[in-house]
Length: 226
Image 1 (cartoon, rainbow, N blue to C red):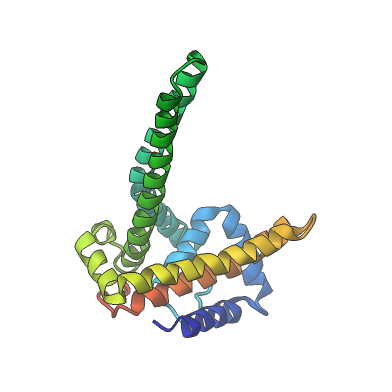
Image 2: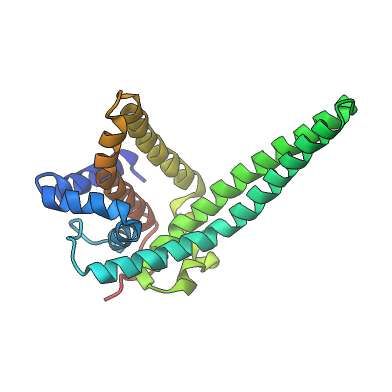
């Protein structure tokens, strides 16, 4: 995967879709508030539409957003289970320390170590689930099938064709780009949050296009729905 080309294509895709089309930009900002709409719009981009799709059929877009949100929630369940387990362990360690200030320091350190180990496991589970979910969501967008969203054999095959190392690196690059934009906005006094909010449609379109190109770099498996 050519990262420079992918980044450039994604930037131009977002630029062409928004710059000079201020009414569309404003409507997408509103869609970020009514978030199933922006998720539904992302689903259209995942389908490989070029140029960036126009805003129409709002009801259909809202329903698509709800469907993709459900897929995301299902993928989040394992992360939530591990998170609750880690929080429970941390709470137990804290209460154990409070209830017995004279507790063996080694035992306390053991509890703390267990909590830290749980946090590491949580991070690893979240990363793995995210890697799987991204491909699953694109597959769902292209087939409109919940079964395909969780077709793990096909998902792993897609990741394999992209290359696990390339796939991880591509996601890290995307996270860095979005993270830099967010940090810069937050560093701007008073109006940083507002600027970031205004830029959200651009970030969403850029990210969705980037993920779409990443998926397509594996070679098409399924066609967009008619």
